[in-house]
Amino acid sequence: MDGVEETRGVHAGVHSLIPGPLKLVNYTPLQHRYPSRDVQKVAKKAVWRDVGEPPIPLDTFRLCIKHATWGALRAGFLAGAIRSGVNLFLLLFRVLRTPKKFRIRLVLHALFGPDTFRFSAMLGSFTFLYKLLLNSLPLIPIPDQLAVLRSHRHTRKHPASDEESLLSPGAGSTGSGTPLTIPSKREKREGKPRHLSLTSEIAYSHLDGARWHAIVAGAIAGLSVLWEKKERRITIAQQIFVRGLQGSWNVWSPRLGIHIPYGSVLAFSLCCGQIMYAFLLRPETILDLTIIGKILKASKVHGETMHINRQLVRQGTFEIPLMESLINKAGNTPHNTTVLRNMLEHAKRGDFQGKVAGTCEIIHPWIDSCVYVEVERFVSVFTWMFPIYGALHVIPMILFKRKTFAKEPLTMLLKSLKGTVRSSTFLSVFVFIYQCVFYIPHSILCVLIIWRTRTSHFMLVSRASFWFLGAMTGLALFVEDQRRRAELTMYVLPRGLESAWSMMRNRGYVPFIPFGDSILCAVGMGMVMHDPQHLSGLVRRILYQFVGPN
Image 1 (cartoon, helix red, strand yellow):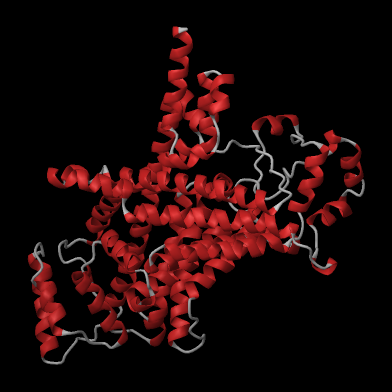
Image 2 (image 1 turned 135 degrees about the vertical axis):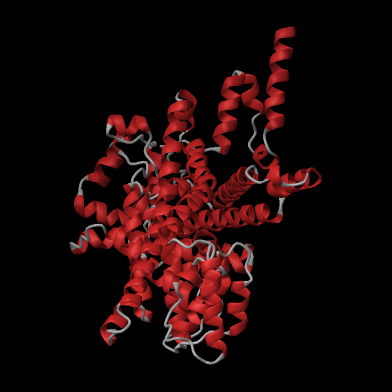
């Protein structure tokens, strides 16, 4: 009897550790029928979805609401846990430099701050709306003209598939071919999916119905971005939209026979050209001010330098107070200070000495040598990005490769370290390339200033030259792992599109659209959820964890 009581105590302890929302599932019968290890397995399954999970057939609206509610609670809890983990990981790198009296407050804010709850509410609402609409729409009677079934495409390819599925329960499809179904390792080895019963197969045929169901469900669920702060909505909407573009491109490019070698590097270069041009000459077109701050921090260039360079390129003059502020900066070398004072004295007399862009003394007044500043910035950017990329490499490994990490922790950590070093080197090379291609034209221009012509001016220091200089930084993407190139392109693509859109809107080429961020997010989610199987593996796994097969 003592052993039985002890076992029940263990089960009760496990049940008490399950978060409140997850207790909607009745684990009480399991506690009496299964040992504690099985109870822990069930509890883990409630939080983390295993690959190869079959879709759940739903025949009534009541079941759809219950299924969507449970999925929303689960997704909200998981999103909050992930956001808290990321916040806490990033906090570890600066908490030691924070006074002790603020550390506990910072930790609590990282775990339970408003950002965590907003993120949790956004993904929970998205999951609820998507699951509810996706599973409810097939139950609504619609005209036959609108019922364009996915199964028709499969019927054209395999005319006997439907007949076989009705004759044999073992020949049916679980919907493992549906967008968000990820086959398990066992299914991959056997080469065939697990099967539902005949009744479940017939019920699930409604779930795989009209093609527009996923588009409508994704578009409406995309409005859940309204939970986030206004300044973050546009960033989230942009990322979702470019993911939708990625899926659409992956769908249509093979059908149209389009193949572009190193397409991700080319797209990355085009985006970098637009971003760097906007940063140097049109910063008002970059709505996310954190991007400007990150570029300034990576380049270690003073804000006054950027203003002086922009004014010289656009107007041929600069404001006197900006130069005075730059001269008074601490750490300037005597040589550069002398050159800058000479520029200032001439500028006060209205003579800007024909300067058409910022010189080396203006760009890096704390170092005389252009060669040494390259090395100094390479090391500075590497040490700055190492902890950030460390989080991006370690956290997904722990989340998506838990079993492998538990078996071979040292190997996985070394692999993450290698990826972190490679990614940090990528951004360092990015800054290195831009500085090199920026200094060389200016040096050539100084030598050829007597023979300068319109052609040399256009190629070396015109507005267009800044765009081409930024595009050349895309070569740094070759340093990164090939599998991460598309992800990095997806990161810079929304910033480039945002800047280009802002420039066109300022010139009156495109209209202003009210609630543009919410509309953009809805359109993007419609594209994403229509063809999620054509997205990158990381995005597809994330969607699978939050949404599941249905």
